[in-house]
Image (cartoon, rainbow, N blue to C red; front, side, top):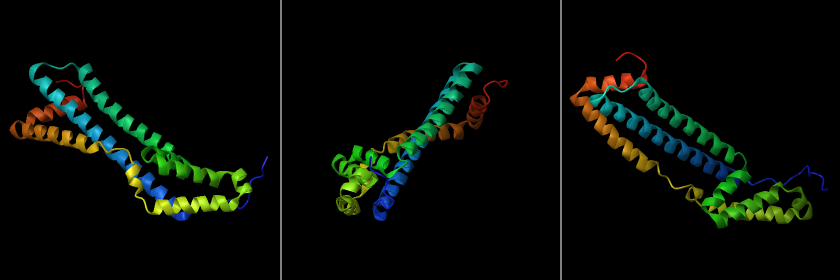
Length: 193
């Protein structure tokens, strides 16, 4: 067994900062996409209550179920944010996420970081490990790691939410009590009508 070295080779600071910037961009993307889905879900639910209340007296359990759908969307946003945060908790984990979007560079990055964390490899050749890290750091400096981010779908979701918001605002301008009552019935489903 190789003893742990006290003076391990550190990952270059410029590479650590690039990985941290990628992590922030990924978390920002997850928040924007999750928020867009949450807003769209809330607007669809509100529009459902608005339309159905014009034709039938919706049951309290139905309105409560629709309110629960919004809650589930909020909880799923938080769960996804936690999952992504855990998936990016170390430079090696971030490198693995990058390797999904940019396989060639990501694999080089994963390999170099594994060398930096391996006492066995550093005992064999510390110079080789340091050189691999510097080479990957130089390569990372010339790259925009945001290209490895997953495709952003939140733009489409926000467009759909904007269209629904326009519909609801138009209805509100024509019949404000209609929208107010739908919001009240949705937010307090078991209250008297």
